Length: 482
Image 1 (cartoon, helix red, strand yellow):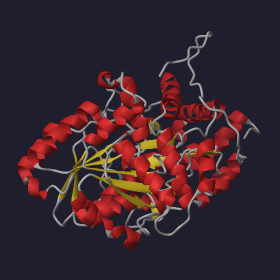
Image 2 (image 1 turned 180 degrees about the vertical axis):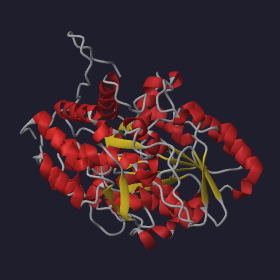
Image 3 (image 1 turned 135 degrees about the horizontal axis):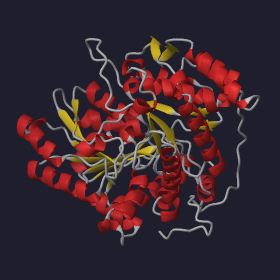
Image 4 (image 1 turned 180 degrees about the horizontal axis):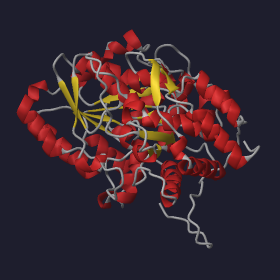
């Protein structure tokens, strides 16, 4: 993975692809943006895409497809059963992960549903490096509980630690000693821990987790949704992986795991998902849930055209140039914001740039959803749609109390091969302006609060007229600029 140096000395990421299909964007003026976020209940999930300039909400299902992926969609076999399209996907997954048994699903959370229904029982425990919202919801729904045993350095906001997603293996041992191995449903490791800044997991740590699982007869489940970015970090940050190909690193990961599942909206740049299982008996327990919830075993709720695109996308994920572009753009954005004194999660991880709302809005109390408020303010200031990843993304305890998140982050996802460098520079500029005017931003309060996954469709209102003041300051500084 050789680097390219500019004679000028400037350090910028170089795209190793060319753009051949474009989609028109619009940038509404700031008054229209205020009206749009108000109509959306200050929840960026509820914004209409026509009102968004840069959609940095997520990298799920919004990555650019390659020419090979689009071409592959034209040869799809749309047979309900026995489709040659599915056979191609199955063959590719077996080649990459080395697991015999494959189950298709319509997306990652469908995989979580099947894994949880089969493996989680009332009173069981699922230790993991860090939770993801839907993963935790499925485990709790099936009577289990989550124990987060991220290594302490994973929660350090600023750090030089290259693998902040590593699990605390000593804590796993203590958990087994306290509760007994029989209560552990499975051990879950998430590549590129989503909720703490897309931070990667080292191969060495995964090997230690595997050894602990072997000592206690535990099943190791690997969420590979963000594996592409994690592979890049293994290749560039871990000495043991430096001389290995991406395929070789992938197989080393897979050989340590009993179950691998993923969202193809992230891994493979298509829409769908799959579960790869090593043990036939476990596969047979899961298999019946696919036709019940997803579709037949040879499409699993996916369009056959998406399956063809996914098959090619998985192959392209083994290409160093493909997987490096996202992390390099993210690192550029993180470094530029950090250089300006703007609080971000360091080192740069995968998935996106993560702004630390606790430091950015240190005057906004955490129960007023500082990350949600910052996401709302950023949209008003720029038309950039980010995602709150903090207390708003949690849910209330059964007694109505509000558990506060470990971190309050605004995630600015970097969909693969979508944005240009000038667009990223625009986002940096508007974040910088907002940083200079951060004292104008206030908090939010729920006016419509769903009981489950409230961050998806709950509605909030500002606690004061801070949004109008922000608009007035923007006009004073930028005049009639968008």
